[in-house]
Length: 153
Image 1 (tube, rainbow, N blue to C red):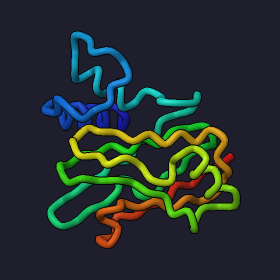
Image 2 (cartoon, helix red, strand yellow; image 1 turned 90 degrees about the vertical axis):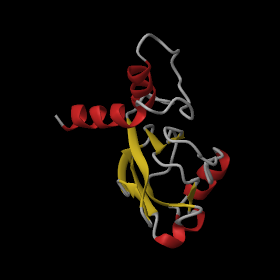
Image 3 (cartoon, rainbow, N blue to C red; image 1 turned 30 degrees about the vertical axis):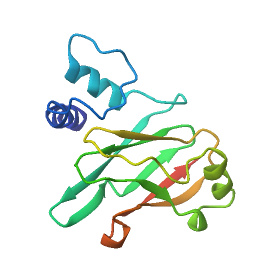
């Protein structure tokens, strides 16, 4: 039931977003369904996609959720929900053993600048060393916009 409620909310939010979403599937007859499919379909690997929203409410900035539990091979998809520019970076110094090298090797240490609602940044975790990976919003870390990615084998 929560999944259907989530999909409904995502559909409602994205209904007005014409640009900014990297759609992996071709545009069909139902653009809202296509956007939801693009958000929830795996981007890489064979694992699940875990969606993390980048949220701004007034002067509060946060990840929703800010604690993400995944398995090696799954994908974390950061979804921009506001008009404030956002960019996600991982704290390389706080990465688990072998994690910093993984992030750098896969070019995942810092993500692209997301400027439009619905824009996504995928972090595929194929071959990631298990452990906790702290991440933060580059422009809003000083406002407490931080999270942790828990990667299990």
